[in-house]
Length: 126
Image (cartoon, rainbow, N blue to C red; front, side):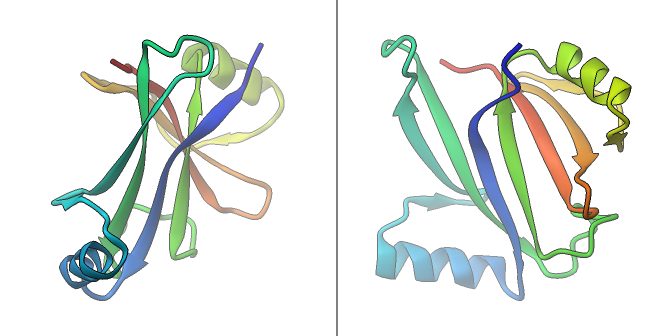
């Protein structure tokens, strides 16, 4: 079973997310929106299918990364979230919440061996 298939997003804390988004837009050309920036790409196995990776600044006051004390969180794309979560449970990995389903995919959060929060995402790509 494949586990991680790619990077789904890079999330980080900052003092002023709007200012950061504007700076990256002005100086590095990121096409930002209220959520950050979306980098579209074509899937290797089927180039007719699109995928994307997110770049998202969060307020330094966010609690979204807890219980991790880090100022960042990485979102990894996976193929079969339910099966992967079952395997991770057997391996003793800390699962922080239940799988949530949205129109753009399924999510769950886990902790790595150093307590970094990780977001796993089974995307619904175009």
